[in-house]
Amino acid sequence: MAQLSITPAAAEQIHRVLDERGQGLGLRVSVKPSGCSGYSYVLDFADEAEADDVAFEAHGATVYVAPEALEMLDGSEVDYVNEGLNRFFRFNNPNVKDQCGCGESFTV
Image 1: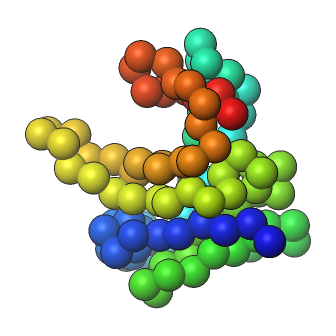
Image 2: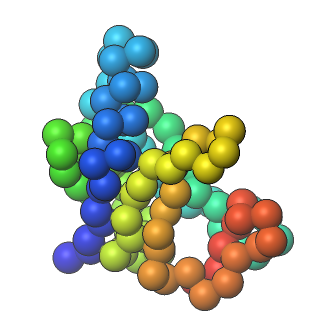
Image 3: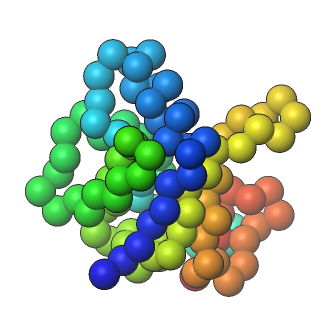
């Protein structure tokens, strides 16, 4: 069974964004071929659960993962970080073998 963890900071941000939107069940994560290293993360809101989604819950927040992304995301931690003026979701993914210099894409 695939594993994905959600930090308290990520859960708080998911709640904050869903509250601002006024709807939604959680964060949807998938991957797509992209960039110079192979794949990039795709984030969206999950307004409803798809039949084949795999849901991970922690700290009252839910992350829905597309089944085709499970193998690449297995063991990952979803975090939300503040670095200077930048705030973003960060994936601490143990499956990443290499990533591009700008951090936008990765190889598994």
